[in-house]
Image 1: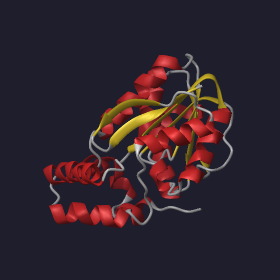
Image 2: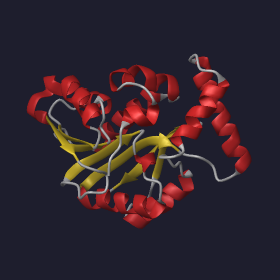
Image 3: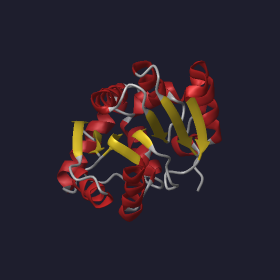
Image 4: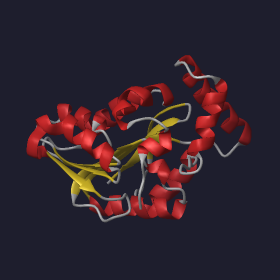
Amino acid sequence: MSHSVEEHLGFRVGEYDKVIRTLIPEYETMHAMIVRWCAVLLPSKPKIVDLGGGTGGLTAAIAERFQDAEFEVWDIDPMMMDVGRHRLAKYGKRIQFRERSFEEPLPDCDGVVACIALHHIKHIDRKTSVYANIYKALRSPGIFVNGDATMSLDENSERATYNLWADFMIENGLSRNEAQQHFANWSGEDRYFSIGEEFIALKAAGFAQPECFWKYGPMTVYGGIK
């Protein structure tokens, strides 16, 4: 399994932190909500796995809240991981990087987090398997929190949600055609399920009560507690 952010999104990895904020509505809010829900449940010295940790932005935000936390940052894009290693160097041995895919077995941990990553899993049965791996790895109490796009199964609602997303890009300097071209380009590798489908997958994986922690248009923070 391989993935290149530069090829998928069409900009250089070093520009990721800047450009992602022009493409993804409420990107920083998703990070903040993930940190908040980790703070609700996790012990003071948690072990956390960041799936698709990329440039290390989410891990850095959580590391500031949990001064004694240990992290594994998983990604399969070496260029993204190089950026993450530079950003997270100040945390020293608290951060370990793993060039591994979502679908590999996870270590025992207190929390699993992800942001704008798991939509690369295009089949719901594979996503259910990933969620099952997460559930198995979590200690109790433990939490899985994922920030990503979800889409309604209703065509009119889906269209309106994509329009809202495009409006955000336009506010940040893109044309409507450019926004629509992004959606078309991403569709080759990405799949946005409905929150209902995500809940079914989470339940099948073992999470008895899946949660939607926050939602704005397509952007959703959801997961489950063990």
